[in-house]
Length: 125
Image (tube, rainbow, N blue to C red):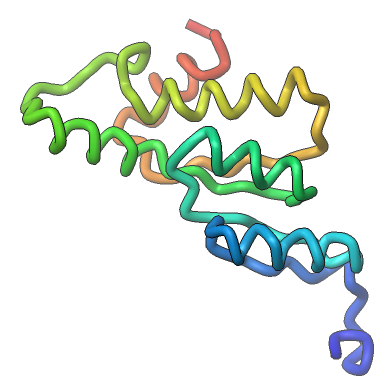
């Protein structure tokens, strides 16, 4: 379809939800040379499944992970990045991808303490 319009596959990026079906679709598209961004990632298990199926890019939502944990525990106070469940989760994802030597791109969304959170993930504090 894109080739008919003169657009090379390398310029196409399909955004899919990281559901079971979305991850399966990404695997097929990636094998056909079309890169995918798997989004709505709320767990390390989802990130690992995306990596194992060859997803080019993942977009975890650490702020939403923090929000869910805050609400489910009834916590009202803030937390430091090292205790932030979203930061901890993305750090685990990053470390898994790093040691597993998957080719990847991670885009992080919804950090409440963006600079401190990034420092914590990459051990730069």
